[in-house]
Length: 370
Image (cartoon, rainbow, N blue to C red; front, side):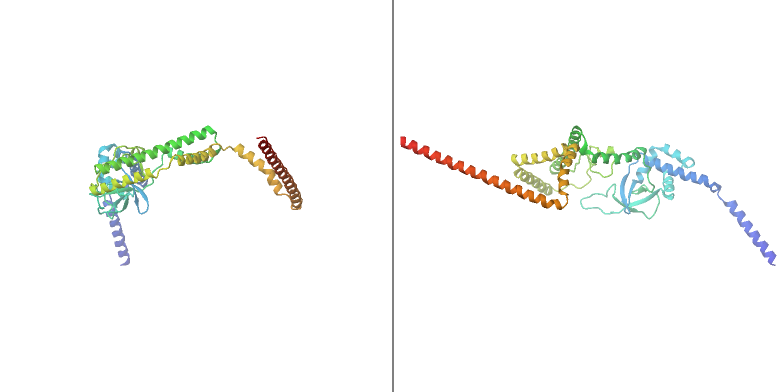
């Protein structure tokens, strides 16, 4: 009986293994090397899509970490306009955009996010197009309706950034060696930095003046160079001149009138308390002296001054037994000098008294003659 039961168990195991082999998907019989290659294909596809400039993306904070993210509808339109990128996926190049995105989500190359602030702020007509703070969405499924997706892998640094990182220590050393530069180089660096700073401040001042004038007169918010103060922006976005469309509610005329009166009062107050010519001249002289001290500093002059001070230092570090002698001699010299000074003062007083007597006699004789 035991032999028969053991034989039946062996038959059941063989039949179960045969049924599993018959129902196994042939697509899963790929060796592990091919599966690894398929993962590399999706990794390469994700890197190509992320490095592409036409996929609009922004930076936000996700769980105290800065991440780069994009919108689902932008991903759909991007792959529709660039179907050649699907060729990287090889056997999966015919998949739909939604299936490709879900595959990226399963491979942890993407993570679906949602905005943290889901309510309208006062004065806003709709939610922000690109929120600055995100949180992980519970369902990791692709959607093109108000859905955000953040990249989870570290972006490869291009070669020029790696080479540029080696230039920062050289630049830091060059800044530290500014005092030993020739005078012409100092002047060139000084005027270049002052010119750049003047351009930046003038641009910000003109930008604020245009915004204030249009806001008070027309009630519209117009910022020229809207990304000039952005933390994360490309070079093209940084110097974009035309402002964005104003999506906020139009301000009330009472608020505009109030800020216009405040601006006029501030301008009049600054004009009334402006420094006069003498104060400006003193400030200019003070600043020019500071700049001249920096520009005219020379290591040779500094070294020569240090060499001149060395004998005094050596005399100050002599033994204490010579200190009493030097003090005695110095006291003798001071007493002798005091005596000489007293005699000179007495002679000077005598000469003055003699001159006054002569003048008095001369006046008396002149009076007698009259």
